[in-house]
Length: 152
Image 1 (cartoon, one colour):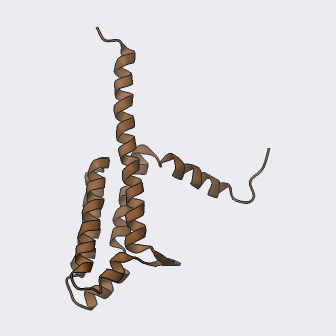
Image 2 (cartoon, one colour):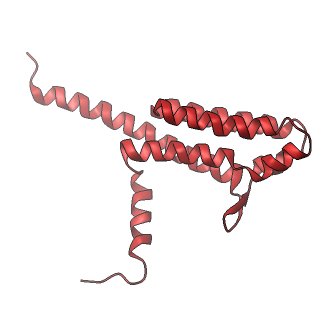
Image 3 (cartoon, rainbow, N blue to C red):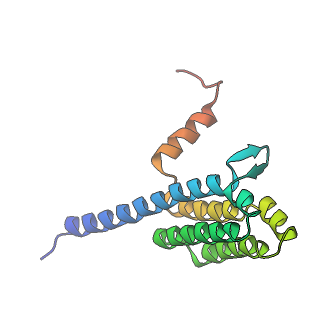
């Protein structure tokens, strides 16, 4: 006969494993969005490898497809919802299809942050189901407190 404690411990271990996978996916999405679309940021506009490589025929498409596939892999590992996967696919398809049109498409690819948008969609999905990774939650709570934090 199995006791309730051992059953709940097994559930807890599986849940923690899923949560850890989701948080790894969140961190990977953060890295991909920075590399792809925010290496250099000026206000709301950013430039990353995706935008720079868009001007090198073939290289931009190869990078875009690879980074997009990696994002989708992490989304699947994190158990992202079907809606999130569809939204990510749409962002990534728009980003990569623009790469196939010389010059005008490359300009669009440079300015359209498809990887960033897909990564944010994944991160929001993970945050809604598993919360933020602990170190990110601590960092954000420190920023919210700011300079005018009451000491007490």
